[in-house]
Length: 259
Length: 229
Image (cartoon, rainbow over all chains, first blue to last red; front, side, top):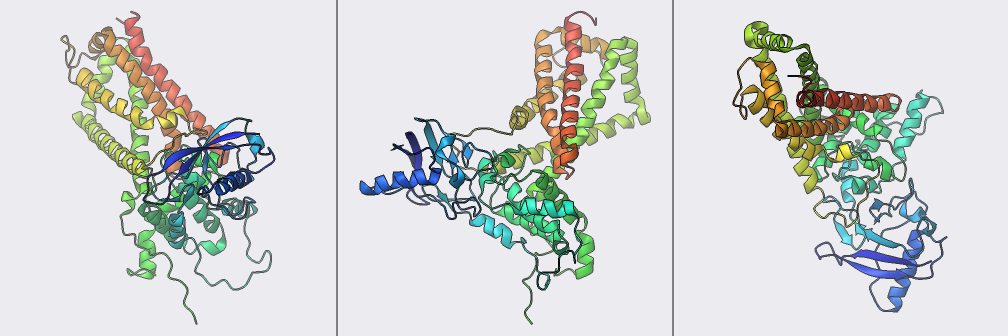
């Protein structure tokens, strides 16, 4: 099959970008989207042109490295699919495709379709961990956890941090990512001691990184390759409000200086 | 012994209310108050169908409740809520616009709704409508025959002018869309959401939105059709 690609080319973070049109000719419908780009890049290299830069690593949908906006949808038209797991059979022969990087102030373009998602790392650094010493892996069922909570924590932990939620959000909000990260810890016993500080600190960092705010469009859930539910955003909202309401009590327990 | 990494600080550098979620909570709480108001306002206006005595009597009741203080308490609360609602919406909107300095060449909506995407400009229409509505029916502008306290006659006068009725009806559709998204969304923002009752909540929001559009639009239509004179 043949495809026409309008690809965002941008030499560096400070350069001006523009769309350049390429043709992918005689590609197999069973190729993955990234394999098709590899073929296009080989052609560009043979012609002595600069290949299209795109992020990728595992190519099995679990690392979160790949991702681009394909015809107005992050990771392309298929639900719950990363760009690397998307195959050309999801497109029509002769179709025109617009390939764009994630658009967000917090994710500056590094080159072409690659963006710097360091903002997500900094949100995690603000509280996406537990600091209690919990020893080695406990015996099964030694820490009783409701089955529903264990399942929900796993659902939230499925987040691969690809940034499609931010890319899809009309507000450029990172609420789904942050919500997933506070939820998978906040639903488990080990995450309880720092639950509210975590919510407050991660939201503060999320805001400082320049992400927008959530208006409950639900576009993030639709774009998420792992199908993470916006119900986690409500959980984040609740934890953040509770962090405010319990701030005085926590300060009283540990003193003004904080922990 | 190694010390654990310092956990997140207890105190935030910015006040909670200034954070995105803090401002959203302000928007949600004030939105809930304003929603309660439009619902009661619509129900009260149904006295239009019971005749001049009923409507003027209802108006007198509002004006004399708590020796006249009740109306002013309501006005202060509503004005405060409106100001906070507009402030939170405007500041969050500017932040969200700034969050995407370069837009997409192509962007396709999937799960967002027409209502959710028109919250901001719909809100602007409602803001302009509220100013007009107060000038028109509370202060008596745009109506030469306005008599304070003669509520029934004032309403009939106003709606006999078709441009007033058309603006009113357009604004009510904007209100319907605003509530269709806003009423369920505010519960989500306040942290109340569960897959089990979210659908129910969204349908309830739509039900209230339709109820308010139908109820409120019935007044100008009834006047224009001559059912209420």
